[in-house]
Length: 263
Image (cartoon, rainbow, N blue to C red):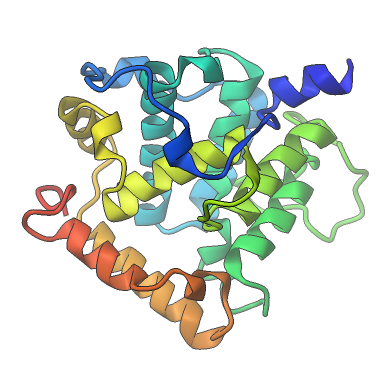
């Protein structure tokens, strides 16, 4: 397979970092049922979902599923040129990214590293995606004497690198340069769920359907606390560059906020 093939296959296509320069195909996206936003059922997707569920608290795990769902809805209705087709490798790569983007916030990991959680999470994802022995049950296999790639559901190197790139840059919000398509998706999904940005790209009924499937009681407070915890132990953390982030998170979950009726 050529580099050009894998670039498109795994969402490594470069897009402008400035989201405002990419105009949506519609300003009136229609409602989508949760059945149109189903998660991939490949061996790799199933293994990674189980691992994420075993390491993340329940609130962050459901957040990850909402992020995946919003990204699918936005891509398929507003940016069809992304070609995020059901059953595709691109869809699988997007799902892996959504499920692992906050893995570095796990209570087990956040204070165990001096790295910003996005950076540590990206490096961790790069490793576990290529090691099929890492699962959500029992020992995670890390540090054991196993060969890389052993086990079911192993990501090719370039797919793992696409996921890692997006995780590392998922809070790198700027209007200069370029990012990957998968990074664009993680920006769109996380910004909507966390601060209510981009709500015009998703029908309100779609949001209600997603939250009904993956509830978010108290998510704004939960995520705000995670950001505060990260900054308290790592004052230099990547997230510190987003001015007023905690206030934006809090406002999103209050009355009048995009997600205020669900928190």
